[in-house]
Picture 1 (spheres, rainbow, N blue to C red):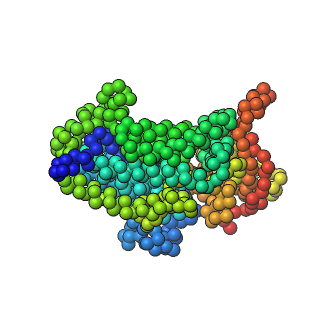
Picture 2: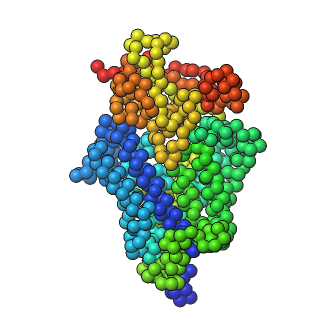
Picture 3: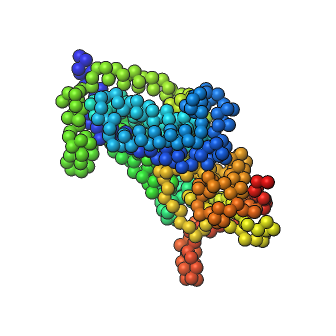
Length: 507
C-alpha cells in the first residue's frame, strides 16, 4: 500500500459536519463556563470569597494545583480573574463564529489549547466549587477537539475514533458505576427516586417523577442499554455507528429536558456527534444537509488545499498520529478503571486532567432534604417566634410554591453545593463561611442569591433548618386550587434545626 492510499484511509471527509458541531459546540460551552466563573468566582473563591483562592494557592504547590495565577507577575486578584474570563469568552466566540477554522490546518489547536489552559488555571484553584465531573469533561474535550483541524483539511479518522473512545469512557463508565454502585440500578428502581431527588430539578422533573412505575422501569433499563452497549457500537461501520450515536444523543436530551446538569449532557451530546457521518445526516433530511460542510459546499470541497479527494497532508497525518498515540498512553489507567471492581468515578490520573474516569449517580438518594437559611431583623427572636424570612436561592428548591427554573447549561455552583450540604457536606468550611457572609450582609454573596428579604440589610440573627421535600401530587394541587390557595410545587415536612438563632454580624 503506497503512502497516498494510507493517507486516504486516515481521512474522514464524511465527518465535516460532526467536526463543526463538536468544535463550535465545545467552544460555546467554554463561553458559558467562563461566564459562570466571571459571575460567581469572586463571591465564592475571590479575594474576599467564602474559601479564598489566594490562600489556597499559598497552601499548595504548582504540582498540586498548576495555574497561571502562580506566575510572579500574574498573582491572583479578582480583576485578573476577570481578564482571564474575558479572554476566554472572546476566544470561544471566535470559534463559534468560525474564525480559527478559516485558517491553516493547525490554527484551531492553539486556540483550543489556550481555552483549555485558561479554564484549567481556574478549575485547579476552584476547590469544592469546581469539583464536578463536567469541569474535567469540558477541559479534556477542549484539549482534544482542536486537533480535528480547520477547514483546510478533512477530519482525521484517528481523531474521530479517539473521540468515540472518549464517549465510551463517559457513557460506559457511567453505566458501570451505576451497576456497581447501587442495587436500585440493578433492580430497576433507581428512576423511582431520581427525578425527585436529583440535585437541581427543572419544571419538567415533577411530571417525570409522577409517571407510572412501568415507565420508570423502562427509563432505568433504557439507561443501561444505551450506556453499556451503544458506546461500543460507535466502532462498527456506518450507519450502525450513527444510530448508536443518535441513541446516546436522544437519551442525553431526555436528561436535559428533565433536569439541570450544567453542561454535562450537552458536552456528551457534542462528543457523540463523532459517530454521526455527513451521509447519515443527509439521509435523515432526504438530501444535502443545510449548510453542507458549514460553507454551503460538500465535504470534499471543504478540505480546500488538501485536494479534491480530501486526502490528509502527510505532515498533518503524522502530527495527529503522534498526538493520538500519546493520548492512548494517557488513557491506559482509565481503561483499567472501567473494568476494575473498585472503579473510580470522576477521577483524574495525572496532574493535567487528561484521560480521566467519568461517571455520575453511582448511588441513588431515595429522599430529598433541603437546607433553608432564614434571617430576621429582630435581635430578640427565638427559634419558634419572630419574623423569620428565608434566603431564596436562584435554582435550588426552597419556596414550596415556586416552580423549579431551567438554568442549564449555566452552572449555579452554590446551589449545587447546597444539595451536597444537605447530604452532609455542611460540615465543610465553605458552608460555615456562607452563613457568616450572609449574616454580615456581604453584597457579593447576595448577588448569588435570589431577592434579598431585607433589601441589603444584615440580619440581626440567622438560623438554619432542614426539611424533607417531595413533589406535590396532582390531587394535592387540585385541592389547593379548590380551596382558593396557590398550588404548591413541593410538600415539605419534618423540620429539624441545624443552627440555632445566631448573630453573625461583625463586631
